[in-house]
Image (cartoon, rainbow, N blue to C red; front, side):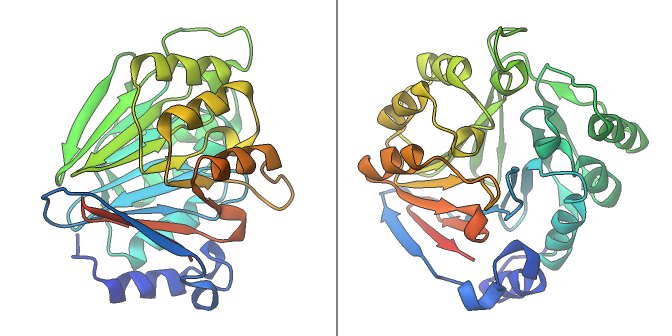
Length: 288
């Protein structure tokens, strides 16, 4: 994998006009940073794609890359284009938080286009054409997915990835969303939380076992307001929050208000891709 310098990143973003509203014209439209006292080397970048009401999030450094979810059917080609422009030919891990079409839709394209070393999934299969295509691509790639049933961690280029699975095998309401894997990433003194589509039951499970604050929160379930979301915000106290929404299906105003009241700067992917960069001491977030 190439060392990703700022010039390469800019070129990648310009090549992906669809991932950031009018690309360069909107670059750095919003940015901020927070500092802490870590001693680390290198940096990690987190790119939340503009994928409509869907999740597709790429985390990458100079020598490692992880993709969390793959957007709707057809979005895989956008992800693959971004990877190619960024010089990324291998994903160390693909994490599929759950199997709703807006999270697994692009998985088949990704699996058939780049080398994927490991796949981590939730234990809640779902009958759909997107899921079937994913399974076929997984088989063609010669891979067996790891179904995450207990806390799972791995370290890549100084960053610690921790995947938290659902505690139950079935849920009475919104079974697929409440089966979401929740991933936390620590690099130096900076912490990132990716909450999939977790709803009330799953949020409260996670908070019961994983208290603590995070610099960056990928807000669960596309910013739909739910009672446990206030509990999550109160505990996590994010400095930055990203909501994956679309103009057709926007986030709830109550969610944005609650985040802003807690001091978070809120970014909406319906307004463009969102890029976070950390060196373990400072987190900078911008809208692309």
